Length: 264
Image (cartoon, rainbow, N blue to C red; front, top):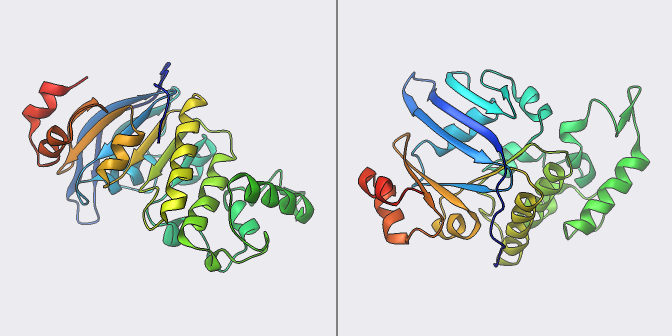
């Protein structure tokens, strides 16, 4: 996939001293700091299990044991609920779409309104507006090339790639201040990967700060403008996306010297 150089603007997200503890009170993200500018993609690389999942969940208000600051456009979201984070304009593609992103028995249309079930435009004065929802769903099916019989098809009947497109369609159809995509092409067919990557880059080009978390190094390199490498809950370094795979591999193994030497 070819993409234009980034045109980063002001800082959209600033994370300072973020620490996350798990249910056993063990520190899984250890006092990390980074920034993401509007119009750039920050990739988070690392071997699975080095704190990437917990970092993502902390950003989305899904972790209770969190300290530090998560400042989005001047507002500190640390300690906010997931509903408050989403209302602040954060779009989220979870790493497990079937567990956390979709309701398999619900239709495509119903899944497209999961985070907007309590008000406009799809609910008015407590009543669902089925015609509006159906038209919206049909538009998104075309726009995101979802292969399905109709907007009433249960999302559980779709392929992995088409399920992920439904998640993307829902999240990218809102007014966003930040887009977070975790393992965006896991379990997705090759034909859908290119489309998903294009949508992520288009989101960056629209001036939105983007974070991509992936254990696929090729994906991180292809999408990112800068890459933050995590190891044992720490950020080893933040380097340009042009950094060689050899150096990134050293950083993923915990080599802080390599991260400092190549930091951009």
